[in-house]
Amino acid sequence: MGLRTIISERQRRLGFELKHLRELAGLTAGEAAAQINMGRVQLSQIETAKTNILTPRLRELCNLYGCTDKDYVEALVAMSEATGKGWWTAHKKRRSLDALNTAELEANCTTLRVHQSMLVPGLFQTADYARALFATPGLGFEQSEGALEFRMERQRVLTQENPPTVHAVIHESALHMRFGGTQVVREQLLHLIELARLPNVTIQIYPFTAQTYPAFSGNFVHAIPSVRELGTVLLERPGGLSYLGDSRSLESYTRMFQHLSENALAPIDVSLAPETHSVKDSLALIQHVLYTL
Image 1 (spheres, rainbow, N blue to C red):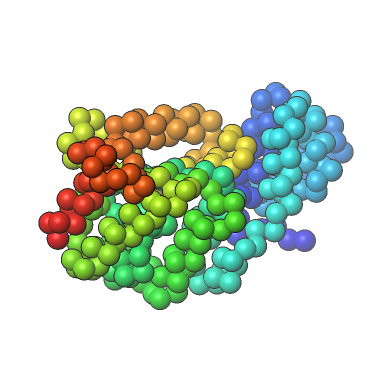
Image 2: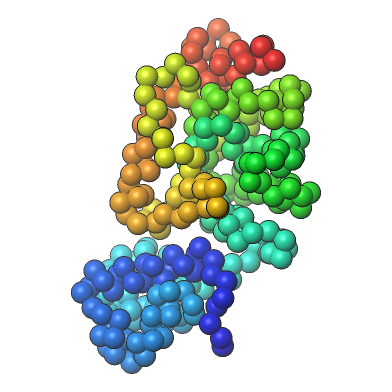
């Protein structure tokens, strides 16, 4: 079997984790490979995700490296044995690798933490709002109906069986951007309120009046699977997405999101009677913006 030429984020992350475990154990690739009767080159190719690893071999390596966390090891096994196939497979030839990686990460997480400063997050966008974004020059979006279809399919993760918990902090700036015109924005803001009715969705607005804003690094999504150490932070860059999975970055973005949530307005809660709403909660701010449209 030849070496991979296209490497998914899941495959890259598995290799990264195995290399990290080896380095923590204080072994070189040659030393580790020799102890399980594997060639050094083969182990290097596994660590760079250019080739796969059989489950017995993976368990051997984890045992050699002194990894005793059973949940973590089983999560690595699941990553290794996964086919990478899902609803997104039908779009494989037409969508970018970043788009496919995003869909796979969302499908396999238990929690999503989302921060957006200028746009409504993709998982929350109406078709008309997304279409307007795709048609706007200079934003870097794929401009095709296929891209719109892909984005709409991604949103099924919100209502699938055992959906992830999704917590989004959206800066007030995003509420005022007029992509697609007034009616499109109005329908989009009403859609945010409807999405907040889902038991697994929490939406907070970060107001202009907040005294601090701890997310100057830009927009990000923190996809957290059942084993939190294997979470991934997706950063939006002009040339595509960047993926962070090292423990320092995960801790940093966990703290950043906590600060965002603490300083944002109270979440949209449509279950409360109007008179019980705080004057300055997320729903009140959205309703105010709706009034001005």
